[in-house]
Length: 233
Image (cartoon, rainbow, N blue to C red; front, side, top):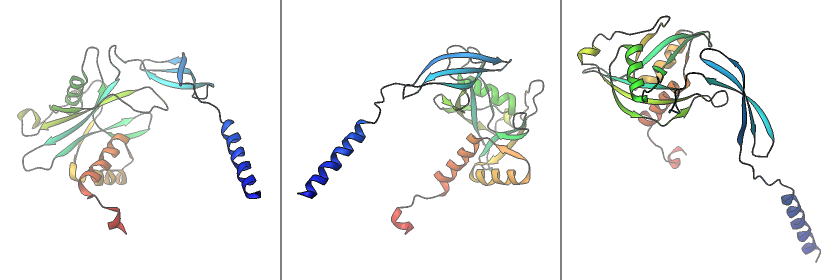
């Protein structure tokens, strides 16, 4: 009899504890956005929003001033593969000094989308300008975010194949704007992560996160066979 009473008391305590949990019914949403500072390319806003618990909070948000109308993407990143007879397929990379980082970075070619321009057209234009190569679009991602804790900046990654045997790609010539200094670096696809690691050991350079994640994906997809859990024991 004492045992039964004890069980009833425990059940009652559990029910009381559950009843004290708040009912979450609020969908997080933006209340207002107030300009704090603005420059030519960027602006800083104070974003007031309501969280899922119904509390009003503030966030500091960086936005580009250059986003075009009728598009959700600020720019494009280009994963360009150079294909040549009797050569390994290579990923076309760009090395440039980035003032916010205070050092050189290794990135995919990239750039902003112009007014009335598609992501595919922007990718081919930026690839030609930064590397001199002319390619063909073979794939494109949906709009993706870059650093959502800091900014609303978005991009679309565009896959491009480059026929390295084509006359226009034998001796590519960059079409850089004033103040642009970009070094083109070719890294073999089948040694991509290894070559990235080698570069970082040899010089002060930071690799873009998208680039390194792509490298890790290549290793997982092609060079590490799938293992059954039982085989690891």
